[in-house]
Length: 489
Image (cartoon, rainbow, N blue to C red):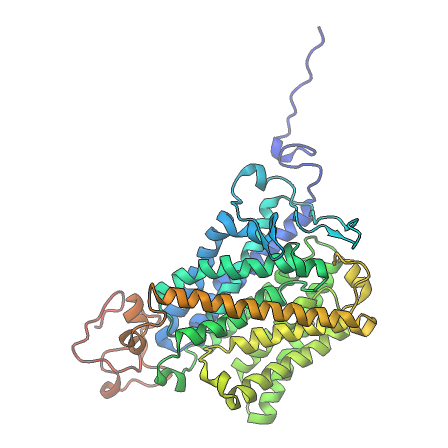
């Protein structure tokens, strides 16, 4: 009798071709995709948590940061329970995937695939096979999850300083389910805009245009901040604003660099273009501030950085470096003009209290970037990424692409205007969208029983006749009891 071969001394986690290392797994791609997902996650937590908590008036620091933190956590749970498959699963409608959980190991450890992404010619023969990256589905689910989460957090920037937190708790899963999943499936998951060839490399439409329009719409339905806050809303810590903005900028390497679903040459191109456009946009915005206001503004520079990052997002791996510079010039000037000039002169815009101007920094910049993508998309770079063969921008003879980009953007705008309005109207019957006046006057201490700093005023020196025993610049009656973790001493 022949002796049986000795057992393999290598643990199954390290054996090639089986177990934890199947033949289809590319460890480099898997590592980069998980790192990219982590970078995007860090943009939200702690990036936007810090940025929101420091760019608002001190009395809203805790509430603003907590809105971002809550949204991130809520999206994660909703995403794996039903929303991932609505965005990237089997087709239910031309703009929507079939809902279902992404929790079982049989699904998560198999090779990633987007089942609705097969692209066919008009005669129904296959033009481009379905997307099948060389890593497990668990990596894909998490990567796409952090994109969904940051979209809700960006939207929150429009309603900081007055939205009822209980309403926000219900708004997040509803908007994710009925708005975000539609844009994601339509443009990325194999929906009708994906099949038509609308270009959105990394979320100029899916994330930024949708969050800007939905944020502005939500701000309309929630109503404005109290008059005192609208007139004076200084950042409570400009240095921390820069820290949050820095995390946002550096995290964009994962945001745009991870969307080829591989660590390849197109990924490198996307990361370089992202930084070129962001830097150019920041400089242009700063120069415009100096020319027209005679002072370089740190907050303005951050806004310019963000508009540059947003504008390049739909084009990151599809355009050449010179086009990234042109897009940076445009993203540093067009949103600046809409925010600084148009917003103050157009009553419809100024009447809606968009706290951080998300409609300008994300909706305007995102739509601008999408249109410029249709103009500058380079054929060779398009071939490295897009399912539609022979794709090209207007500069290279693809004039039809500009029209596609406009139509795709208008669909995202229209869907978000309608669906966000419906969600807000329904929620109004359940809970007030806006905080009660007492909470609006006091801020964090009234809403959460906590305050961010044991400091006096919003950039003011302590005045006993004005501040009494409280660390903000709001008026408190003498009999108002202290609460929570901020006991008056």
